[in-house]
Length: 341
Image (tube, rainbow, N blue to C red; front, side, top):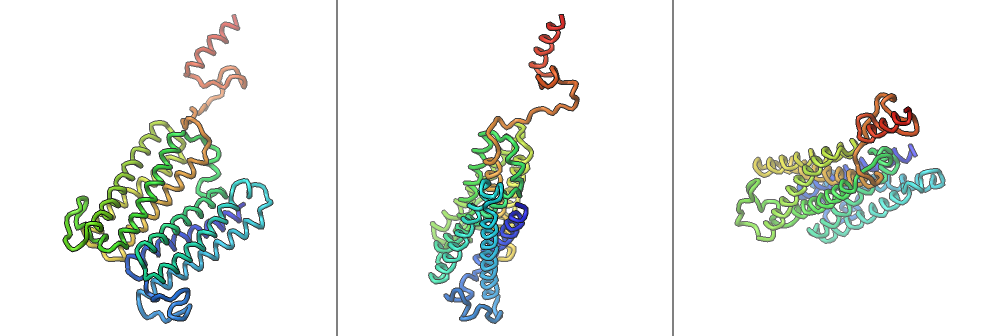
């Protein structure tokens, strides 16, 4: 399983790099850097790197090829070890197979996007499949025990926490999809000239303003949901693993709002604007990991039992493991004293 965990980690890193670089392609307008040629770039797999848009586009394609290679290796390794204990039971084989299928689908959608002249909705479909791919690779890594997967199987997570984490992941997915649409829909990226209010831009269509505003509202709702979620986890004393994962997601959400304000207020260049989408990808990954870890946890009230530092504080030896100070402890003491009489 350790070898499968390493393969999953490598695939996850490459998938994240590929996804973030795809955002750079969209923001910089380099999607047609190789024209409508695919898989070659102007008839060559190694074209002369004489234009910035060509360099960005061909680098994205190289990352896609590397990602497919890592997915094939990961699936082949899981298939070879399918008879080993824990491989088939943990679902590593299934998730690695799904990741490979999604990787091939992303490649085909990338080709379709190029052939359609980088049409917005083709690009959005490519972006959505790529996000599903990185989530599946993360699930594979968790199933091998990484990212807290081993710890999650040994904890109790309340039903409230599981439902709230799934809601966070769902809202994050829709928000990031809308972010991709905002970057590609004509005029949507510049539809709002102010932050946090939208302002007016008479040069763009109303539909573009709607796309931008919808993306903003979803982002704010996500951060508010994560804030309430984190507060609820602390109040209910949920497991530290879930609290840490939720805290990371909330921190990334707050950072995203700050970056959004800076991007609009300071008119950041495309390279720095790519940080906004990179953070959005990180939010999607963190909320998905949070939801998956909560899903793996056993169902329960989610409240940690009080730790007993002194074994003498327990009544009845191994038969009654009752912490001192509780009501059950007081009743047990009365019963024990009555028995002594």
